[in-house]
Image (cartoon, rainbow, N blue to C red; front, side):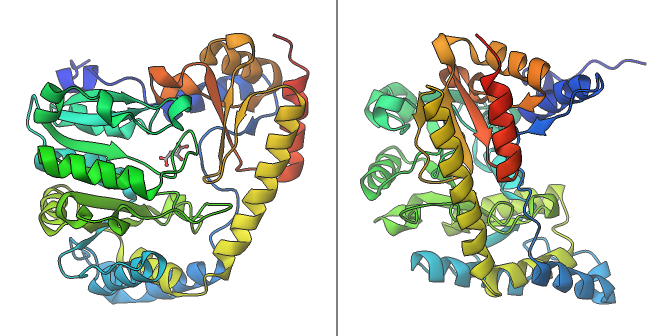
Length: 387
Ligand code: MLT
């Protein structure tokens, strides 16, 4: 039998990376060798000491039971200490920190706790598709905040109409930004927090790329006044410690926002495998030198790709953070046509900017998640395609 899908599901666009994966397999089946610069999945392995801790923890029968819904106290404490060391702000592990099955899970679930049908959620475009998807699941309305290059890919807060702000329940922001790699400064965060106070909405700051910076370390939204009243920040171990497959992250912030998210989670999932949480503790409180080492590897890749693309005449937004390079398509070709042709003719997987929203049109994204030799090979292949 073929069952009719819910209206909610029918409203969803195809999930960007699943779609790219499908096309990639199609091309690979023709015998074309693939170099994937698509999804941001690190090629660098999870550091050894973290894997070793998982092995030990997996042997322990106490970890074979249902985990605590909100996450092991020790994990939340390690997360809170990590935040304190990195950003100088303190959160009570008891009620201001919750563990997440990756930050994607938190982003998808949080609207269910606060957004009623018809409420507005301010969503950046281009942006991580889950901001819009989570809004749709909750019956909310995504109000698109265009991220434009002339504004350094920050939303223009003054352009949001008053009647939308009055009906806004939540705003998603994400700096360092995926896909553009843009950074935000203190003034921007302060303006966001002030606006949220004025119109009484929640700010959900996705900081999955906080440690992938090349010059200045990014600041947290909690480094500005009043943020604790209105904000939650999603953190992820995925990119910082090359742990995408482990599904572990956490959120810190306003007590009542954490409580709402925690309540949704209690009802839909049973937390993270405790052995993975123990490995997470090791990641957050163990030797951090590997983070520096990985950062310098990505930096070398960034320099190489930016230099080569510029020498080929591409217009590149210079990335100061993330492992993405955001590039204009040549001759204003639409991004799906450009990425499609590159994939079919060369086997190089790129992400079309439009996949992150209509304001991403005219750009494509390169993920620096393969080694330098492969990156060079990919760029050589791209160079041979004529448009
Ligand atoms: C991306 O490539 O944009 C991200 O890796 C996707 C994700 O984190 O889920």
